[in-house]
Image (cartoon, helix red, strand yellow):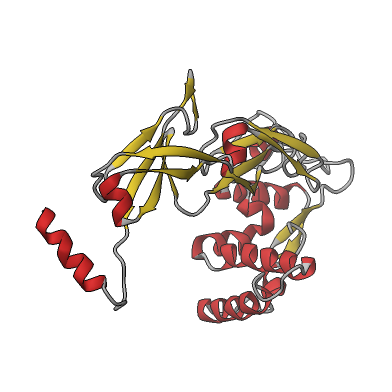
Length: 304
């Protein structure tokens, strides 16, 4: 986008007010938003372009730098004072052509046009290097920007580990057992392209936890509904596991609603083994007005 005019991208004149720029951006952002243009790559790229343009023109300081120096004024480490010195030096050394947003140097005949010295503005290397905060040092080429994508996996895959295919990024990624929700993994050299190579790609992992399961560190918890008779007399019930199977679990007589029982080694992978799965009893009370329900409920009062 460095060679595109930011004002033209937003469809406004260079002298547009801050309010006009904001209105133009909001109008384009609504039209191009990915939610309104699913699977539309052109709209997606335009949305990014418009957002990037507004990030500059919507900021008074950045807009001022862009108006005076063009895209160079937005580069990291850019020194506006050094750029002005360079421009004054160039005018003395042979003339300068250009307008707002960019300028061109004409050295005249023989490169420097036979100019003796730099008019009190220092050595050319100092001027050029100072534009971007480097003095006499040449700026090293930079890698491309890092990128991030979201990968959603199941709780079982988080426990056992898995491998996901990333066709757009041209590779596969191994996800280790026990990964946490929101954790990021890196694929080196799979990010955006740049002069010194590609940046890195970060994959942020989202775990789709099944309904009922809650993760606390390396442990898991699940609510298990019980009938009143099961809570009073005890029973053997089937408990779902995060791997998608079930395990039979003995509920002791007299268990109270909210009481937790532990299944060892059925939680998330941890150092030296696995965490635990906690079963929390949820005693369910019958509802409705079925014949005999009220009498049965009142009969229980004698046992409290």
